[in-house]
Length: 171
Figure 1: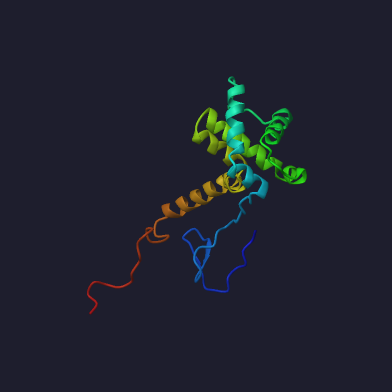
Figure 2: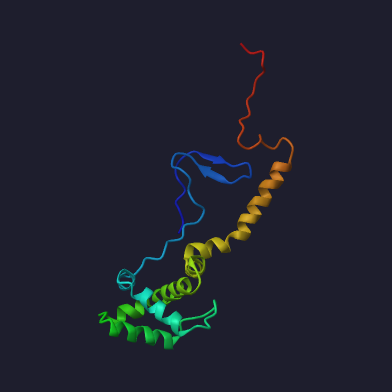
């Protein structure tokens, strides 16, 4: 997603990047968050993903952290939903399938290991986290450019300080 350049005063950082006055900080990149589908919200609200995860962990003692939810596990989950009399539209389930699978993996990871492992699973699929990882090289390049500018004597006042012109003898 691109932002329109504001029709305001343009300033430049010491490294030459433009910043615009009058509206706060405009991000360089905008990545929309995933919007949860209603069926996923219902599954979470009714604790069905948690309940299935507890069963899954109990049935898979040798589970490794790189596990996946394959078609067999997904079929077992659907059977579990039928046993719990959870009514849903198959098309809605298919539309939300990748997010249901993600939430299953994350909840299973939490039940088997801990919250940190759950968070790692969730971050793998988070578009904002993924984009941030992609931009690490760009951030490093910006940082290096800024360090080079900082190393140039007289290129700009030290960050956080204002340069004032004048002498102490002024009345």
